[in-house]
Length: 212
Image (cartoon, rainbow, N blue to C red; front, side, top):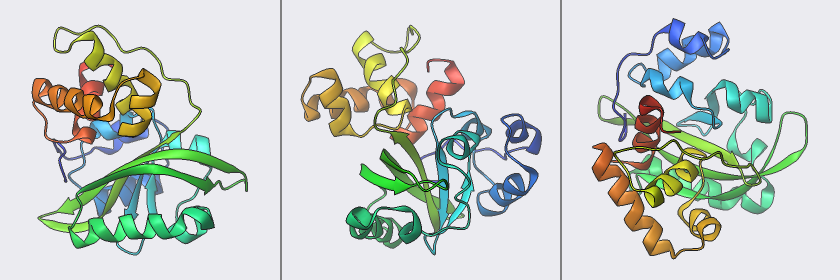
């Protein structure tokens, strides 16, 4: 997996968050090494295959956006954002960018539109890029306070709770009233202190530690 601490996901672990059996089987098939921690994420999470089709959604994503499995990016993303979404997806498949983040408007299964902040990364299987894993946080979603931690400073915890909610670097900077470069420095510090190598891995590790 790209930047994840991975172990084999078990059906019991994932089923515990209400994802149906077919969805469990699909996750096992596409990403057999995904950490069970991913199933515990409370922010909407998804997997796209190499054809830009939604192959897996966690329970939070289904509850927020409806069942979008089987739909392609062009069917979900608003036309105004579709070109950028395709470009960033292609960059990850080609290996020119490991991760991307940004804000797009999507069409839910119910036909409504929601603005979401996307943070996504390459999904690897035995060194090959097989798709994209991402978090999709509604832009207007309130963010709960992070738990106190001996691992991180209070400001790093502030940044971490927004990361865990799927917010982009720019959005975190705006919400905390600090510079984008300062946010990047805090994120690097978070990754170093948690012993991880990517933002998404930091989010997963934070859930394992009970920090968010």
